[in-house]
Amino acid sequence: MKKIGIMTTGGDCSGLNTVVQRIVDGCARRKWSVLGIQDGTDGLYVNPSKTIKLTDETLQFAQSHLAGSILANGNAGNTNFESSARAGKLSTFNKRLKKSLSDLNLDALILIGGNGSLSLAHLYREIYTGLQLVCIPKTIDMDVPLTDKTIGFDTAVQQLVSYCDQLLMTARSHHRWFVVQTMGRDCGNLALHAGVAIAADAILIPEIKFDTDALVKHIKQSKRDYGIIMVSEGISIRGHSGKPADMISRELTKAGIANRTAFPEYIQRAGDTVATDRILASGFADTALNAIESGETYVMTVLQNGAYKTVSLSDFFAAGKQQKDPNIIGAMTSNAYVEPDNILLHIAADMGIYIGEKKK
Image (cartoon, rainbow, N blue to C red):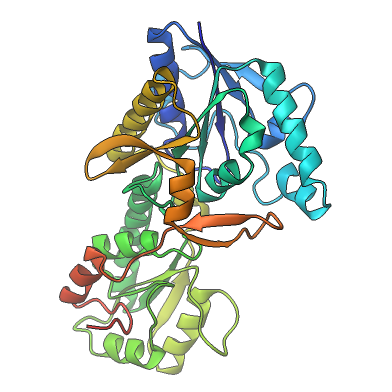
């Protein structure tokens, strides 16, 4: 009988409990035992490791659609991984993780994480020597190379859409514009998808240069005196500082356009998991368990053109644009971004949405 470990790392999102529950179900059918590692790498770092036996009773089926992770993801932004890197003790930390995994006597580990966690798994693969490592991509940013979808993204889009639908009611009542700042870091996928869904009047993302004068002109020419301007948190304006939404708001105010800023913040990571994310979680869970049965290791589950499959972590890392990890000194992350030929950019432009100075 195989012994499988599950760990959720990085920022939380909806769909984590769903994929954990689906894995537990799949393991039960295979007569495999499942051990949950709590608090991500933080939970592995302590001695003894923080673990919980996962059964039907641990995460009840009726609650598997809830946001967050029953396993917890650790203290995001201040993990032992990051503090060890800052102290120059990363090698010691990695050896501690490797020993902890060895002590747990796992046959395989399913690591559910974003592009940062998956990049670190590739860079420090020696941690997972002696067991099969299968990764599942999750992030509301949808910035993981080689997969068409990541767990949590669709729910985050729906959360933003619901939020903006409510704002539009008060925007209409008071004849004003709302500048809504989304998450997404330096990737504009979340802002782009939600912006198209609500027919925002403008969508500003890091990948497309924009001109504030052109934006102001576009808003002034609108047939309405209210609406939504969707702004990704990763945009910047030369000569300005502060939150992106505030910077755009100041420009609108100077032009005499009544507006307010709105920050949905962490509700983007919350909410009941939508159907498409539950389906994705089921597909990734099944693919991960099949990969373990087939003896695969150092792989990531992906959805490509409607098909579930695995790719090697080395291919994942090579496929993206590498940048310095913002939290781990000396490490790199592999990132995906909104490409110039993204169909939603063309759709947005055809709908009359201002998306920046995109070349025709």
